[in-house]
Length: 230
Image 1 (cartoon, one colour):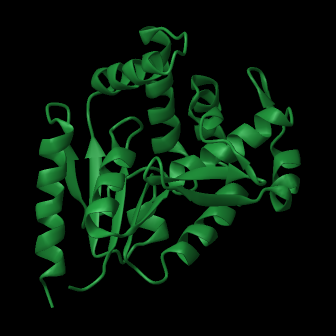
Image 2 (cartoon, rainbow, N blue to C red; image 1 turned 90 degrees about the vertical axis):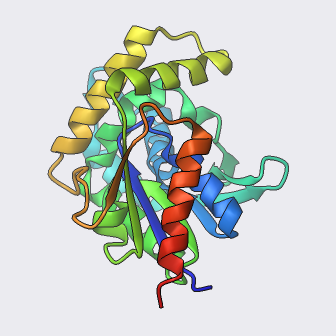
């Protein structure tokens, strides 16, 4: 069975990472969460006080990019790779609402995107990879054999994200999460460099009313159709 590249794009909180992890495990492929990479850079900017509620020192962040080392390390107990920033496990820290509030602004910076896209393309040079993000099918892997674009209503996505944060013990309100989702949507779709758009050859999946099992089954069928083609 031939190995392919699977690109999963879409709006925030549509379950891209969950689906990508399921596919990678089923197919024994490498999984790369590009969102975690951008979150790690945003977290780095926050820790170094390059960004805050009312300021963003973009030039200093750009100058500091050579000092940012990102690495995925597989955690056998969890069954997936975790994000390491400069040799520190930051998987938990990068999933907070605070990081979510800044990640799209950091991802707008062309120099940041260039650095991370180069790393992502290197990771996928041998195929057999599932990668999710905002520009995987349009910029990172425009020739991917299968491109999925995931969407759902903002309210549905905000509720999912709110429930997830509540389970982790984060003290957030649904209104704040919905505001964050809508703001990220706007920034992601309106940035000049690699805006979030659906690739011409992508298959769009609205999972507003699909559970994880139904979604996985539908996409796995698409994968099987592609890998059978000579």
